[in-house]
Length: 208
Image (tube, rainbow, N blue to C red; front, side):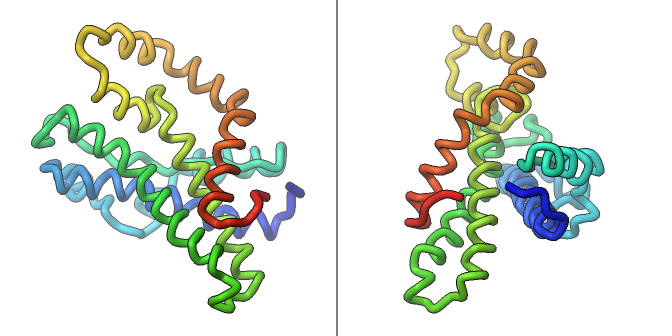
């Protein structure tokens, strides 16, 4: 991907609203399950000012894009208190999965429009724009479902782990930063084929 400032500006807007959708979904599901923390903190809103993280929403994406041609980032995590959930075990898993679920839903809806774009007479330039949104949301979903802390996939994994395997949770939490750095720097070769497969499955079009 060529490092083009205009494309970067478009991409950063898509990234911001995709990660906001991700974070709001955590808060809404937590609220539905009995925890009002996110609502009381004023985080159940699409207002970007409530969610943007200077490092994760601007600096890291810019450094990655202009340095490697790739981009990734994050927003401020929506706070929630697992002890307020009516079912702390499975509620935590649902809250954790909600963010990726929102990104997958966005990818499915827009990907379906891409698949039938010709019949719907959607302009090619707009289909290309939607393709970027689909790809980025698939990236956010797949990456966040990796089962290592602090990623959302770890909450889902820990909910399914029987108590006798609690040592696995302790091990992953103890070395979470190490595993996360491994994924960030060396996991691209494993994540990209998954994203490409899902993109083609949903849109019917080849991945970028």
